[in-house]
Amino acid sequence: MTTTSNALPPLLPARRRRHARLIAALSTLIGACAEAAGEVYGPIAAAPPDQEAVPVETLSCIRVALSAPLLLDLARSEDEARWPEAVVREEAASRRTYAARCALADAHDAAHRAGRGPGRGPVPLPGVEQGAVMELVSAGDEVAACWRDDPERVVALVRELTAGGELVVDEVLDAAVDAMVVCGLLALAEARTEATVDPSAAAEQCLAAVPYLALAVALASADLD
Image: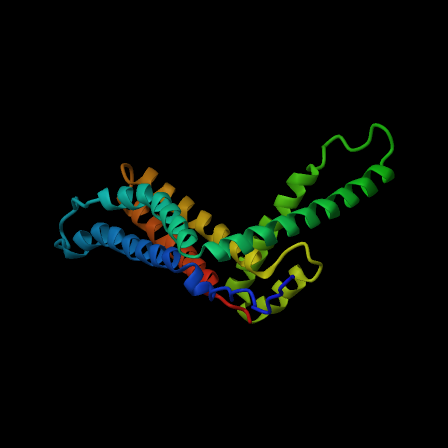
């Protein structure tokens, strides 16, 4: 005898819950960036007007730059451990959309090969797998830029990007988060480089990372529905 179950699959958590540890880590980094910049600008502001050389502290600029990647990686791991069912469903969706993007890239490549004569095209096109990865990265970049410049259009843009089935909403938003995190980490890496040369430039780079990290928070917590 066979039995059937009408139980519905468990609902996915809201994105702000699914990425709660990452959001908390990003928020901590934003505060650390401001604090590091304050350790440079504070002494300058407190110094007498006639004082030329003002000793400042750049250790926090270096510390936040070094700790940021590890902090964010740990937060992501903790989020995954908290929501294993969500991770399983996300990975299944990712495999489906990746296969769909590969199939689409393969079809495009076949069309390009048919239209090229021998000896044409000295620059090789990306492979199918590369094209599939690049499409997701490009979608994330596009959504992040749209969120920054025209947030009212984001929902429509994401719907457009996911209409064909080669992408799903959460992975596009997650790719946008990744894009902003990378920009923030690059700014912090520059702060670390400047810390021993130009303290003010190091402080400026710490602050330059903040808008990227703040946008990553917004994207990580966004539920478009």
